[in-house]
Image (cartoon, rainbow, N blue to C red; front, side, top):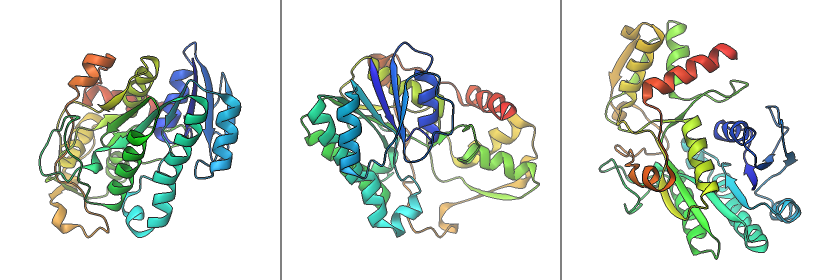
Length: 298
């Protein structure tokens, strides 16, 4: 199978490139800039997916069986203040991929987010009705709608609070932020009134790959299984790495003034992905072990 991955320099993109490189599939890695990890198999193309001409040129030449779209603008507050840039990266780019996929009869797998929901309750299954609170959430929902209205074979994989380690340590996340802050002796305030099912990047990559190999169609929740608050995550991270958890203070989201609203409670029910894709995520402790081993290598 020929698989094209967009956003190959991101956290998920790097994990997918590494995973697919161990399989018998042909990999086409794409990113805006030079690839930051080694590419043992396949080929790399520089690609700005907000540029329709570039997208059509690369996709029609490669003729992939599947495109896995991991590229997105995910900085929630930046999306709120730079709406044009957000829409270009999260919606126009997806519309470009749809047009190219329709020309080549390519299956599109798109990664979306729990931020398409308002967070009034959770955990959520795939039938829950979206109602985003932020412009980021609105843009990701608009992309979902565009895909659903297309003539493609498609799968939308929604995920939650992804954590993991990139090769160049260029991407932070809650686990790495807590670890680094405590190692530096900094006190941190962490909210205890939001709930998520944190997702190991390797698990999300496996979910994407399973959806590709099975030519899955429809919406799937791909995340961790355990509902946790950011405070829970911080405490467990401190305990796992043997750091001073007394530096962690509980607070609530009303104490933070952020441009974009966050959904209070999301988290996913992943029964459908388990049943139909064979998806089985790591526990949070197992995920921290993966992170620990990778940080050592870096």
